[in-house]
Length: 161
Image 1: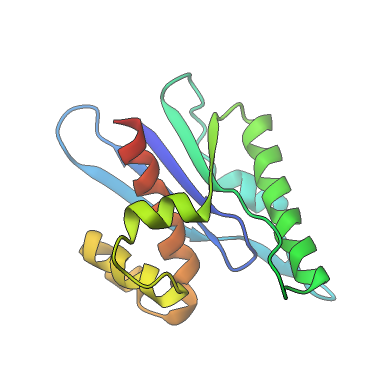
Image 2 (image 1 turned 90 degrees about the vertical axis):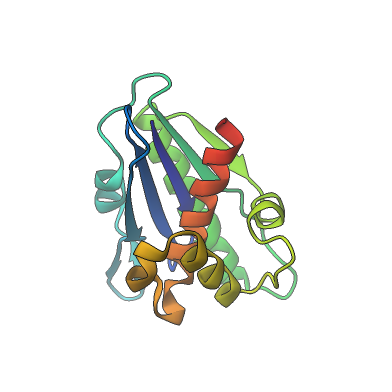
């Protein structure tokens, strides 16, 4: 089973968990959201699609994507960019026939960060505790998107049990 966690922002990321069919080994890969620098930072859609596994056989792949929305005091441009990334990811998943589940930040954080602060750096700490072998990939503050994507994927794995 392949489980994908997606934090859809430009500073977000994709976490892919590939569980072994036999045994308990799980392979993990973390990818920052691909972007390109033009006049401003833009999503690199072909590179985003290339991150998705080629296997979309029913029941073999499932994605969990953070259901984003605008927030009070958030600028119009940043809200638009976040919504744009969210829409691009949904389009990619739909085009590749990868089933997905929308997950609110409140839902996955309640499960994965129980008793913890909910700020960005806290997700890195929790992810490092749960996945110590990935600590090097989560070592910098800017890796909060990787941590969120990884925790979303783990939330999805737990929900699918």
